[in-house]
Length: 150
Image: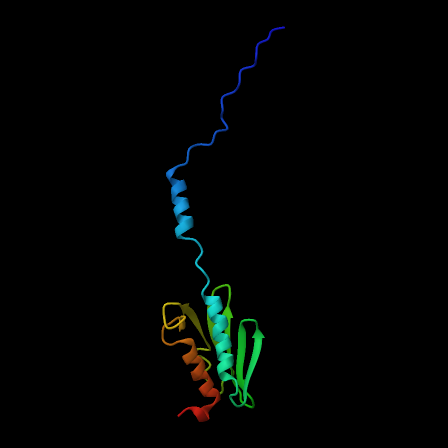
């Protein structure tokens, strides 16, 4: 019997040294990480403010259609306004439903994005930058309450 030991294989399990790509990936994780969601809490506050501010308005009907969607109407009148928030895409939407005398080709909804840099606590601005959410809700309510439009 011979007491020869078998030769040990060379280490091939060693990982290759990191490349410049590892540094690039590390920088991307720190600089391009997920941004904090400012829109969802702002949408909740905005919907709550709309309901709060319309409390006590005669004949107004406020219906919660979903966790992030409310419907505003006037008792005895045709037409309604739906204000909602899409949590996936992070936009608010104002939809006009069944207003009498409306041209069938007219715009029936507007979408708004949250601009945290505007105003105290941010502002919901329409995508075409023509108006903001509260101004459009006010204009739609004036269509439901024409006697208030002076």
